[in-house]
Image (cartoon, rainbow, N blue to C red; front, side, top):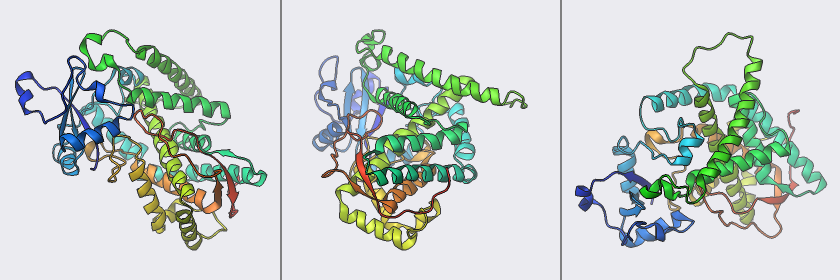
Length: 415
């Protein structure tokens, strides 16, 4: 299977006979009773019984699940325009100011933001210009771990990776370090996780028409609280930026205040809860539990890079074994839980594929390479590989705490 593609379809009663097979539905709730907290596991089990194209009714919403690679290609490549629009939940609509790029319907607005993102914010020219920022933050990150190694301290890598990724993406977008203190990092991590969790949870009011205006599960209270905290954070950042630029000539652009906030939310949540908390963390956890693979990766880095300098982004294409580790980790632990564990499709495909793939792969590869190059890891008998209950993403159930044991001390930039 390549991916689990859930397509929300509005199908009239007269066309219902064209629906694919599926399990028997109950009145009112449909197939909701079959869904466990780990929905991707539910879909995998059901598809093995009901075939490669399966119909589910979630409340009053008709859905089709396509876990077959050939069908996924047919839908995502050959019929991508038909399936390019994404369904909005109440939480998504409110938290993103109804202006999210990730969830925007396919149309003029989405095309405008896609072009802005692809050619300006995440284009090759911009990535080249921001390379010094990423390099400086990586050296700062490794310097912290080397200091912990000297004192034999346990490091919460989940928190440190979060701070690294937050600082990189916030400097690229806002020219500020977003996680300068522990309190800032903790607060931001909590906010990002809450956003991704509530985006991925089932809200009965979204899928059952007679609960539409009733907050049965308390979702509205939760997403209003998250929205208010996020809005306060962004307002402070934007006011600070406006103060710095008040004497400069204003730009004549089409970006409203809410659109800017929505775009920043898209970038911060996507970069933080996929690259930092999922990809790097899962990959390192797998390496700690497979010491022979870790040793081979270290040998490759010693041969290609050496021990006197820290690995650079330009080195990563010359590290095929490390690249294979990253791909296998993505296959086993895809950032989006609906993706199958039997194939590799971590960034989607077609028009709605992730525009940040170049940045994500560069940042992931060089960060993991630096962790492998500089340290052995003592996790106290192995790492628990349990998944936390997923939302839009599927992080580890427990934070990654281990003791870094320095194996090389490359020259680092002053930070």
